[in-house]
Amino acid sequence: MGDCPQQTPLFTFGVIADIQYADLDDGYNYSRTRRRYYRSSLQLLRNAQESWSESPVKPEFILQLGDIIDGFNKGHDASDRALATVLREFSSSPVEVHHVWGNHEFYNFSRSALLRSQLNSTPHTDGGPTGARAGGDIYAYRFSPFPGFTFVVLDAYDVSLLGREESSEQYRDAMSLIKQYNNNEDLNCPPVCEGRQRFTMFNGGFSKDQLDWLDSVLSSADEKRERVTLVSHLPVHPFSTDPICLAWNFDELLAIIRSHSSVVCFMAGHDHDGGYYQDRDTGVHHLTLEGVIETPPDGNAFGTVSVYEDRMVLKGNGRITDRVFLFSGCQSDADHTAK
Ligand SMILES: [Zn+2]
Image 1: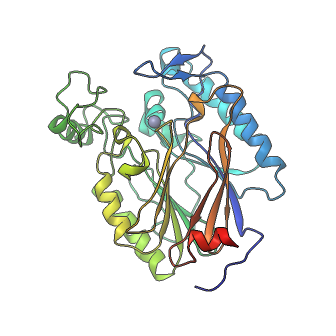
Image 2: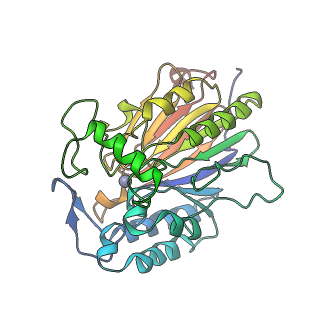
């Protein structure tokens, strides 16, 4: 590929993860090692919204990477109120928001309630291309904000104990899968055996139907030489996260990525410490975004991504690191920074 000297991005978008808002005093994570700022997470979202609305190039859309409100809301009968509060904050600007679903969405709402809620951001595709959605009650869809660029929102809890009726076949299948690897009485407690730690109740995986659909979306994108960014609450590359946070069948998702040329980036949340790794085999950038909920009130945790023909540039705020995601086939990072 030739020189790529663009100055003005083709488009930009915002990213934010794990807001986990609740009108509650600060608390701690499961292992009581990290403080969680339930109330001030709303102010951190406000900071992000202000930054995006004041930026000279307005974002085309925002990616909300899941866990928008905390599971504790459910016990306080505050799920609807907390969600309304956060969504009101998002609606303070007219920018479209694409919502990813995480474990905390399912602690608060059933899958059918989520599908009916404002957290279902599937675009209206009447008259649009077929295959834009995975189908059934799988919450996965693709959208194209700019010619040549596709984003795919994935459902990492399609195979899970969360959000499925206990009487359903999907629940029984997920239970038999997790029990193959996790012998603990409390299935939120990870197995100690290395390589199995992800088999906990707060994680999930992708069904064969969803993987087949993704495969067909990527085949079409390959043909059109599009750049595809995959978005999921759960990370799928072991070097981009603590292995405890990986999707159950991350390896099957990685195999699909490997069999296509169009994927350039995989974005996830869930691991509040964040992470990043560029897969040497595929060139795909795996970004796990630091979570708002464990960010002190005087900090920030959001990013703005500028997209160019040959790369995406993440401008981080607060504890999010600036990064350049060069697309495979374009000049090397070294060449780029030497310019
Ligand atoms: Zn999560």
